[in-house]
Amino acid sequence: MIYLDQAATTQLCEEAKEAMEPFLKESYGNPSAIYELGEQAKEAIEECREIIAEALHCDSNQIFFTSGGTESDNWVLENAALKNRRIITSTIEHHAVLNKCKELQSRGSGVTYIPTDSKGIVDLQLLDKNIEEGNSLVSIMFANNEVGIIEPIKRIAQIVHRKQSELHTDAVQAFCHVPIDVKQLGIDYLSASSHKFHGPKGVGFLYVKNYEKFSPMIYGGEQERGYRAGTENVAGIVGMAAAVKVQIKHLKERMVREQGMRNYLMERILHEIPGCVVNGSLPWRLPGNLNVSIRGIQGAAMVILMGEEGICISAGSACASGQKGPSHVLKALGMTDEQAYSAIRLTLDATNKKEELDRTVECLKQNVARVRNG
Image 1 (cartoon, rainbow, N blue to C red):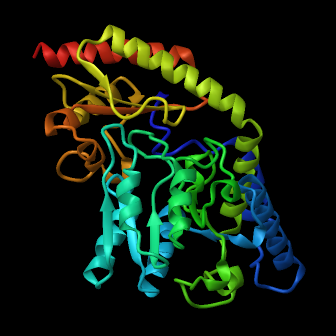
Image 2: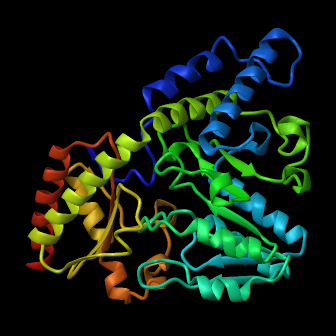
């Protein structure tokens, strides 16, 4: 099998698996217990918090463990609603943000959606104009899950803070794929999900700069210092931290390799398959992301055809695979329905090999010709 849908999920790395095993068997204590087995679990969690904090260049008490990016996004947005703040977001956000915003609107919250240009970059002038002085939460994703566009987060943070407001970024696609320094960038809240960087599914975290002013969303016990009740997913947290250590250690080398392979794949597709166009900005893009529209094909049908060849690609976000209609991200970039429906997404990482890319191109060429020739 050739797996080129790394943006959807990644394979658990061996380091994460090995780190998790003791906490699934011998060290299975409840972190809230005061005997040794519980203390072992508690200490492990705090060590993991330190690892993630070091990766983000923040304090460990600013990290809160969650079930993943969706919960983290919802937590921040719900807090904004509780404080009657206007939420400013973009039209290309993940559904974890967009659908929560719709729900908050139904309860009376004010939400403004900022468009992007044709390359996927948020309109900064319009953003600036819509922020309410001292009373807004701006939620702009770090990198888009479909077209891989990296937003100018530092510039956005400067605009937001000049208006005495706060910035949240959904960094699910970006964390452990590009460098992130929350202090240097000026981020107030950041969401991440373990399974996007070779950790286990069902675990993630939220970075909160000023947590003293933050409200819990799940009430119950005193886990996560009372901010997020419920017995911790110890094995998951340990696996996530192990994956972070590996990915951060080799981040620069991985980025160079991924970008090189992505460009090789892109050049072959553009040169060997007529009627292809890359969607979104190329310079401001995640190293391993390639989203292309191919004239005369249906992206969803191509996913099935390639799958029959043992090649996993996607036609957009995995979280939106059951939705009706074209991709909201591609439509927001100004594409027609036909262009949006003809898009496929190929996302790779350092685990992929050049031979896999060559076979993918050959199979893609054959299937495109097969569809075009009827």
